[in-house]
Image 1 (cartoon, rainbow, N blue to C red):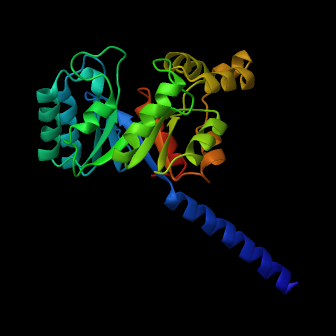
Image 2: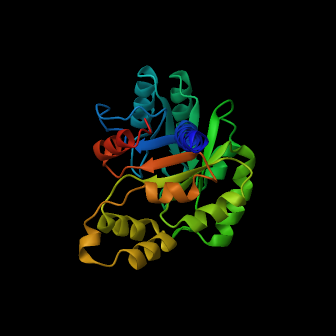
Length: 267
């Protein structure tokens, strides 16, 4: 009987410490806008700052510098099609570098170029990001703005410059697992915060996440389901054996995301 009890105890402690080790391995980052207040910012390490079409790169750079001073690792977006020319790009990069920023996410950005650049590859070729840790965008479910073949070519061109890939947000695990299996650098899987299903369907339509849209429609058809928040842990549990990195798109729900991270002991 004593042996049996000891065995049960060992299984319990093995399970407990395995869960604790899993939490230690998992790394969460999230996105904010340049005008987001930092009062409810979770204690994650990496904080990405968006630069939307028509936005001012100086505001994004300033928010990144503010985050450095508060002890975070800021990752400003550099959207190629929103940067007018090389002079502007150089100023943006060196404002960030001079302020202590050490990491950048290089993306294509909006659909129409506002100036000289129309691809993230062109930004990477300039050499201005030397000595910075570089992330590039990945699209396991494709993009409404570019064909699958062009996406594949762009990824091939960009990968030599990249330290890691950040994916679009997804809900269907299989495209993520398939995508990760083909990569030679770490993949940070895009997830949403705890949003209502109806909101997720709206955002999936906007970004062209076809598989995730079908996944939502096939799994959440009742009216009451649409009003419930979708727990990000549903997806995390299915892909965490393939990656330790998760990037949260909060869609303005920073307070709810912070609460969810704390409730799950992720921060």
